[in-house]
Image (cartoon, rainbow, N blue to C red; front, side):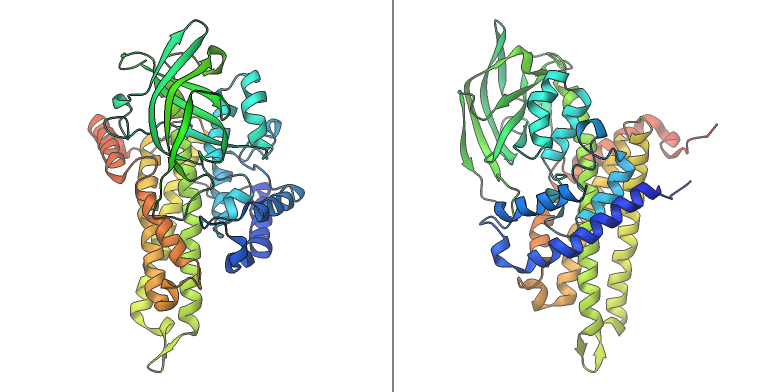
Length: 401
């Protein structure tokens, strides 16, 4: 197996790393750089985005004809990890959720007209977007078969009614991708639609307070009461909503892992730096075996996560779906991020619990990682489904020609 990367990917990674070091890390210690929801302030963000564009580091994940650098999933794994050394990294390079997943989805399946109207403005950074699927009880969470939101055909349009919640970025979004039920067919009962913020017939009920910090636009509850969506705004075709969802969520889960690995490495970096200088009872923390065990364990778990992510990325790049590989990466890296932040706080003591470092920010952010895009338990069930179906072939290595 060849784990080398191309000189092009290495160059982009190094330029991203230099940008993060020079422009973004200093902002993390500046209270004026944060908005009220503990993300990068929008005026500061726009300045950073202009710099990223000027340095040719914009939308690296997209095809060149779309406006990106055409890195593929392996290249994304390398570069996203470098971006998220800073908590402000991904959004600066227009590679953060939910826009990242929405852009990749529209690039993959949108018609030329849909790309021009709905994708291009997001690529250019003129608008933000949201993916609208999760519902409150008794609606759909991890099980889309429970979906309650309905889209009823009415001539050349669909009329939508229902509720959604925890929709990331909704408050600031202009372009939305909505999944709703169009029939009771178990396999072809869902359809994906595009709609605009200014379309009548829907509202944001509330921005749901969370443990935080928050993405721009928060996590919102939405109500639909007569939203009219023209048939031309259907993605793929009626009844293919689950295909749209699968096309988006698999790669999106993996890109989360790519970014979380960057944050995990940052936690180790902060912990290692402090342990090297902090003295206690005449001994540096770094010279204590207990601290060495903690940091060594994290380093190993990060490398395991990187291998899981890279295998899944390689599988997708060669045309596979990588379902079990993505699920394994999602479980491992989500739990790793939480452990990395927790361990780094423990090594830093009160300093880690304070806002003198970004560790407490990462710790609060990390807890959602085990829930978003499928809880740990859902992914373990999916892995077991593959194991039950494949038996010993679950572990089979592919044979080359």
